[in-house]
Length: 365
Ligand code: CA
Image (tube, rainbow, N blue to C red):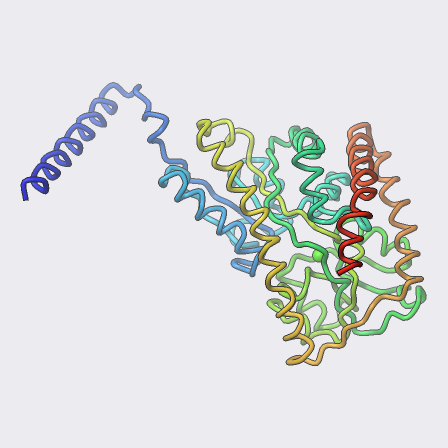
């Protein structure tokens, strides 16, 4: 009883003192709120449909964790694609400060920055584990920051899909001839490779993929993998489900922060953003790893999807073309060349070791 009364008195004193403080601040008009009490209310815009499993829930988890970790000092509201700006406007909107933060994938900005695709995924390039090694211990992150700096953006890796599926097709792919004239939704460098192979790549945000496929605007689409593709109901718009996802072997998702907003955060909140993005980066890959298998079984048994493998000669030709496409992109400018050189050197090194570790083990078990 006495304890409770003491607490009440203390609370009263705190409220009174705090009240006096704010009055004094108001009168003086100069005393800023102590840095460890200031609340930052941010908008986070995304390229994903609101709450789409894994892709859309990743930024929600990021916001939730940051709110708890910061005791409410970093309060982030998440917007799905189209709620504040369109999916493909996220980069510009965060760059201009319309929103403080964004979540998407770097290959969506290929029209503006061709080499940005290397920070999401490269056809026949690194898988998720290798991308994380390059970004966080192989110099990749420093190059990514350098690339985005002129746009007042600070990038973070914030999710990974793992190896994706080759995609949904309404006709069989039995030879290279079947790629001729194929109109397919496929972003990034993979789209450019398809173009060189005779197809027509189309860029569409996730929210528009189903309708485009279902109405025949496109002949085929890739999206992510069983877990996400099932959520978009792509199985009810196409018959064949092809693997492997040669074009996206481990796509990194990005969180981008407006530079001015980033600089305004005290050091402890910046540290929380660094740690929380790393946590979500890992969490997303874990979720895909855990959920893809069951989703694939649902697609095959409940929805009668036909699972197909792309023929070897098709995959081999796409691989040869991909090498040329990526090397040409590197010639855009000096920074593109440095990013390409860093990526390729890391890939060569990691591949040599993974041949006798990860790959040998998977073959052996
Ligand atoms: Ca994809």
